[in-house]
Image (cartoon, rainbow, N blue to C red):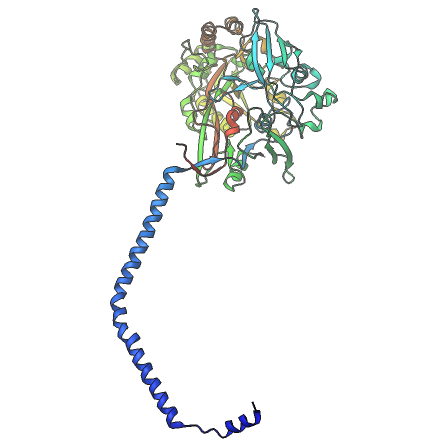
Length: 593
C-alpha cells in the first residue's frame, strides 16, 4: 500500500450532498415512526396502568404493615421484659460511716455496709425467721446450756482464705474483751466458746436461754488479718476503712466526697465465690449524707437509685414504701424522780392522743403500744392499753396531788411545778412526736423542757450525754426487738444503770420473774404465757408509752428490684435477706414454656 497515493485520492474525494440529504431524511422518517409507535401510542396505556400500579403499591404496603404487626404480636407471645444480671445498685442513707468494723458499727449506714461485706452464723430470711448462714447445723445438749455449731466448709474470705472455726472463736473473744470497747460486750460477757475441729465450735452459756440462737447474728471477723493487731487499737486500725469479709460484696473503696466527712461512698463489687451464689448485681454502693434532706436531694438529682428514710417530692417514676419492722418508738418514762408515782405515768399514757400523733409523721405508721407484738407472741392474748381520755388523765393527776394553778394552768404539788425534761436524738419524726405530746400534756397542766440532742454540735455521743446518766424524765427513743420476744435487756431490773438498756429504770418483781422465766423455757406456748404476764404488768405500771411501730421508709426507682412488699423484717438491715437477687436492669427474654 502506497500512503502517498491514498492521500491523493482522499484529497480529490467529493462530497455528494444530495445523497447525504436523502439518507438523513430517511433516518428522520424512521425515527419518527418508531417514536410514535413505541412511545406516544403507549402513553395512554401508562395512564390506564397508573391507578392499577398505585393500587398494588398500597396493597403491598398494607401487607408489609400487617406482617410487622403480626411479628410483634408473636414476639410478645414468646418474649417478655424481665430483670437481668448486671448493673450498679446505689443506696442513699443519712448518717456517716466512721467505721466498717462490725464490732463498732452503730449508724444505719455502717450497719448496712457491714451486713453486705460480712457473714454471720445465722441471719433472718424474707419471712423474718431465723435461718442458717455460715452455720450448717446446730445441736443443743440436754441441759440447754451447750450449743454445737457446724460450719459450712465452702466459705472463703475476700482474700481467698478459708473461713474456719478459728475465726468464730476469735470474733467472740474480741466481743468479750473489755479492751476492744465493743457495744456487743454485754451480750457475750458470760458466754464461753471453743473450737471442736476445723469447722465446728461449741458455745457454753451459764443457764438455759431459749433465745440464744438469735445472738448468733454477729459478723464473723478474719483472725488471720486481725490477730497481729493490738486489740486496744483495733477501732483505729486501717481494717475499719478497708475490711476483708466473706459476704456477697467486697469493699473496693471507701471514699470521702469533698471536704464533708458525712458524705462518703462505700464502693463494693460482687464476690464471685460467695457460698450462696453470685449476686445478680455487679456492684453495690452506699452513699452517706448528713441529713435526710441531703438524701432526698441526691435521689431527686439521680445520684442514687434508692433512698432510706427520705421520701421524695419528685414526680419521676418511683416506688415509695413504709415497711414495718419488729420494734417501736416509745416515750420512755424515767420511773425515778417526778415520774416515780405510777398515777402520774398512767395519766401521761391516758392523756396522750397517740393516734393523732401518728398522723403528723412524715410517713405512714402502725400502732405499737406494747413491749412485744402479737407476731412475736402468737399463742397468748396480749392485754389492751387504755384508750385516750383527757378527762381520766386529769382525774389521775388530781388524785396524785397535782393541782392546777388557776393563773398559770400548770399543776403544782408541795410548791413544785409539774415540769418534765423530754430528750431525744435529732430526728424529724421524733421532733414531731414531741410537739404532739407537748400539746396534749400542756392541756393537762404539764410544762415541758425540750432537749434535742444534735450529735454534730456535741463532742459527746447521745449515749454519753443522755442515755447513760439518764438525763431525762421522758426519752423519745426506738427499741429494736427483732423476731424473738426476748425484751429482757430493756425491762429487767438488772439492766438499769449506766451500762444497761433499761432506760426507764423500771423495777418490778413480777415483770422480772416473767422475763427471766421466758428466757429459760424453750416451749413456745409456755414462753408466750410468760410474756403475757409481763405485758400485763408493763401496761399497769406504764414504764413507757408506745407511740408507733418502727418502719423502714424506702424510695426506689421503679426500674430496679429489691426486697418484696411481703418481706418480714426484724430490723432495717434485714432488707438484704435476698440481696443476691436484686437487680437494676431489664431486657427482652424468651418465656419459659
